[in-house]
Length: 115
Image (spheres, rainbow, N blue to C red):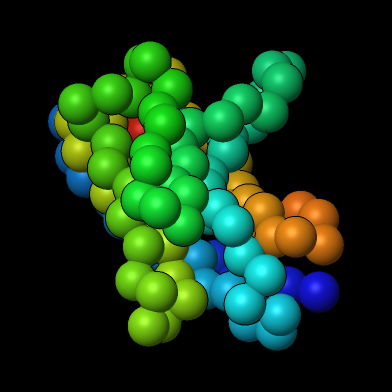
């Protein structure tokens, strides 16, 4: 089993930046990918970005060029750098860890983009 702890998030003005962090613990040797999803009120949860063990990345079209996902394997941590934030990026962001034994989720962190 993999445990997931998120940090970051908060309130930012349009055009601003935030960085989310997510650290995995437990059975980390079975991890195959780390990523972020988000869920806005009244909408389904959607994949924002994901990075595999081979550093292959995939992004939601609406965040390409603005968000960057990266991971520090020594710290078992994945980051989501979010730049040029827009009000439509407002959502609860969830870290997702995909391992050989299944999927583990973080508790979620609120990101609000508003003036």
